[in-house]
Amino acid sequence: MDTKTVSQPMLSVAQAKQLVWQGIEPLQGRELVQLNYALDRVLAEAVVSPINVPLQNNSAMDGYAVVTEECSPRTVIQLSKFHLVGTSYAGTPFYGELKPGDCIRITTGAVVPDAATSILIQENVRVEGDIVYVRPGEQCRVGEFIRLAGEDLQKDKQVFAAGRRLNSIDLGLLSSIGVTQVKVFAKPRVAVLSTGDELKQAGTVLSDGEIYESNRIVLLSMLKKAHCDVIDLGIIPDDKHKIKEAFLQGDQLADLVICSGGVSVGDADFTRDLVQQIGQIGFWKVAAKPGKPFAFGSLPNSYFFGLPGNPVSTAVTFDLLVRIGLTKLAGQSEQSPAVTFYAELESPIKKQPGRAEFQRAVAYSDEHGALKARPLGNQSSGVLSSMSQANCYLCLSAEQGDMQRSERVEVQFFNQRF
Image 1 (tube, helix red, strand yellow):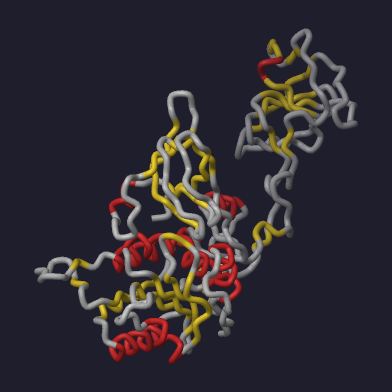
Image 2: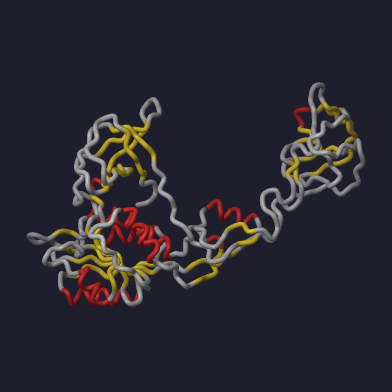
């Protein structure tokens, strides 16, 4: 795997995203899974429909399938009464002969006989015995309310291309053509570790200067939500040899290694130097707040992401940059575009030009339906509660400065990302 070194001292977020996408190749592994287990998996080969959907012409409405002499599409049918000779229900077709002037009772979804010209909806007719009359003033046209075979999907035509991530509706569509299993890319295996002498596992007693580690549980949870197989390498102290051992262990076990902490420029920040010793660094600084110290590269057998140690920075850089890499690694053929909205600021915000910022906020619709955004007061990258309380980012460009109340700001909702 080759990740080219970038000469710029600091990349824009857009540049970093593009380099991550270009620097990762999809996994080679493939597996056949039952449709029940294919949600959010990525197709490794195209799916072609083995049948027409619908399989046969069928009725879009309850009513009467009529037979006339007219055959040109959309031509107004002239007959005003028909002889009722049978029925066609969903799952129980009509197999008798039909001639012009005949009709059959038909329900929604039932097979329309080949001889039938159109469907008269039941609201537009009057029935007396075995005679069906068209109500005065109502018209019926050739082909009306008939769903044609193959109108939804055609036999031997592609339904989905390889590289598509399957959602719930996709699975229903595949089931509708009789598919029971699909070939998908293997799940990415991701090893996660945190570095820092001050970090302790929750449940232990803290000494002076120590803190409970939270980044790993955030990352492990987000990776599970992204349908990855995760490997927890634990908390590693600020010791070059132990961190290097952890990197090499992760490299042997996983397709991707993620380290939280140690990518800045402090005396105990060894991550970048160690990756350069045993692999390659593609880039390590991004013009983003939070998230400036961020490394992307490769180890001998895996890809590598080095995330900042501050909790909010870890979550945000994973969301903005690591998620893109996981998408490519899992076989998805294109990036999922971020859906953004514009909201009116409820209060002013402070920002220095120079780096893109992703401030945490609560967005809501007011009583008039206008989208408003309330920035959270503490935007420190160490305050994880700001992520928990928020439901969106305020996306501020590198050039953007302070913003005033009532100005329009770009919003990106978290939705189910965390």
